[in-house]
Length: 265
Image (cartoon, rainbow, N blue to C red):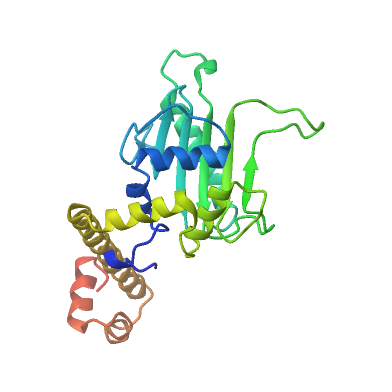
């Protein structure tokens, strides 16, 4: 289980700090423009941390940085420090795209009302092990090259471990910065300045400390629940209270009490 960092340890790689830095509209807009090589007149933030929950029985999505531009294009930027097995990261972009589309499309709207959407993952690892600093995916025809589906859905994976002179210089410097290198160039130096400004903000620090305390509490409850389930499973298999107490690092009295409550002793 990943350790919850102290406030002083946070870097641009950490979601909390990344979200706060990207609240700087000028920096966020510039990063999007440089990654996608497009021009944007203005961006807006529908929510501080966009949560999409279409149905009560569906898995909700919490997006790191979710913005729209003046033409209605949607941009979701995610900081990703952990690779996911079984192609989980790619499948997550598929789910994010579906949820974003359902959130954008109003009841009764025609499908043509769906705006262009870009899902951008800034990864601290090479998600596809091909050495590229950036992987861009759009739906294309398998049978014949050059035919695009034109559903206006784009998914991009940036790799902070990769490098190429073909990259936009600001994106290249930003990826090095994400990878822990020194801030180079005007843009990334401004990002680094914003990181330091955010970290000096007492209210933001208190917000993070409150969040960290809640996460630790949830983890402790999860560990306690896991230990309880292990004890019950061992009781069901007939292990003695003494052996279970030794494994669970608790008292025999607690094992007996828990067993009686669950009609296992």
